[in-house]
Length: 508
Image (cartoon, rainbow, N blue to C red):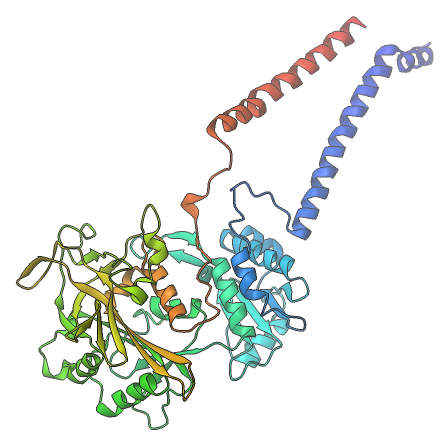
């Protein structure tokens, strides 16, 4: 009797359809789990992700491809090594964007770029090829980039950390932008293409580091611009500028000797080199005999540049700076032809980025003006930046002053119709203070200056990606509709279907 009852239960309509429903439900859940695991595995392996920002914010763009197409030719191999396992890189918020960026490079140049992961803690014996051979210490947040190319005396390997690919606000010290594309493009080119050398002159208290041992913003900027940046002390007998393209004098405390200035003059006039000079009021206007920059200022005067005094402006300046971090005005194209080209594209924008100089100096030139350009033989002097007419220098009130100048020296190449050009840019050391900010135009002007000085492969058109501007590419109304669908309609639909099924089961 009992067996017959069990048999009838298994053959009943309720059990048959109920079991089918349960089986289908279980199979559906298993299918969802398997499908989810499969999609995760594929996205993990191939780096798939959905970009809802409206732009490929963290990947390679056409601007980089235009530069790299002539560099990553067949036979040129670049290997990028992350110093921890892939899952840890992806779990790290800083490493995640770096990885996504370089993956886009690998996809664009699959025959040239290879990405690897090396857990240096688990496999120190594999990491020793870098630590022993190159004498460096590696950390899990490091990224190694190397190539098998021989590039003169340039190293074929460089080591970075995640922070190198981000921009930090100099005031709040918070990370506000991703600069990975610019950095990766610059680094790849520097390893695969012989870059012009940029020398920071040292030996006179010049600013090269940030005071904490790390290189300063100007040094890092020139690296970003694609230069092979080094230091040189011209007091050394074997010091030579013959292989340099640009030299930088950044806020010297003590004066230069005539022998050193002769080397610089030979570099500028005979080798047609380029120079940037940044001065501070503290040192350029010092009355202390041991800090008198008489020789350097005399050399600058030969190039038309005279230091007038320190500028203040209580109207057109950053708040809480006592009128010393002043906003700059851009000369018009008619007033300054080759100098105005440094910021011509910014002047064309509806909202022009402001340039800010901290503790700005005013400059002047007493050369004779010819058609609005101050000339002295083959040398031409033009202003790059003005203060606003609300500025003051000493007893001179509510006037406009030149606060950045550019001198162009042109000479004929041997007995040909070709001409060579040398540039001298002079501004204040406080120009560097806002160099890493994406809000102001300081960085853009210097990038254009690097191009003026003859750099061919300058990644000027590669913008940093400000996190604050990252928005979904759908309207507010569309976002509202999708919210209602996902949060309201779909759950109600599921509950309705479930209720109908339960009701029909009870009636059956």
